[in-house]
Amino acid sequence: MKFLLVEDDPVASDYLAKALRESGHVVDAVDDGALGLSRALHETHDALIVDRMLPSLDGLSLIESLRKQGRTTPVLIVSALGEVDERVRGLRAGGDDYLVKPYAFSELLARLEVLVRRDQGAPAETCLRVADLELDLLKRTIQRAGEPIELKPREFQILEYLMRHAGQVVTRTMLLESVWDYHFDPQTNVIDVHISRLRQKIDRGFDPPLLRTIRGAGYALREPD
Image (tube, one colour):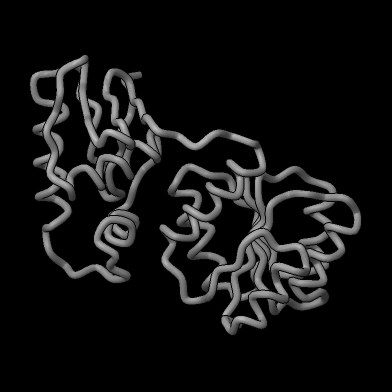
């Protein structure tokens, strides 16, 4: 997916843009509200990520101008202004969702995915597939090449997350935030242990292996080349 990030805090912008790109997405980043509006009007993006407090043109004015000109691109507002009244203002200005800083990257990514699916009218997924590996979200079952695989709850969560991001590099931070709800790295080998067990269950005895370790980056569930 392609996102437009409008954020004037260079640290926050660099962090988010890097995390989105590591997740396999394309990011255009600008630090000015007027420039953000211009690019949103003249370029195509799957969704916008817009901060409230911006130079030249604040985030809500940017969104209002975008909507007045008939643009329906989904907008996720990110802001330190988290009071109910402020969130309501953001949604009434034309924002599709509102996320309060500080936020977990995994939640931001999930919200973006929901906005894009909703915009495209895509039905909710009940079954995830990568090559001959299949995960049924309703029955909570997993099979590969037609053979059932038994997973523990945490292993199921990890596999579901990897399958939802199939082909992308999933970092330790993303797994910690989404599966363990940690917003910091506890400096343990908990992820390595669970990944090793999961790999034994979904790859051992099957060919080709699907779960790969990307040295220095994280993990990826990928179909064979």
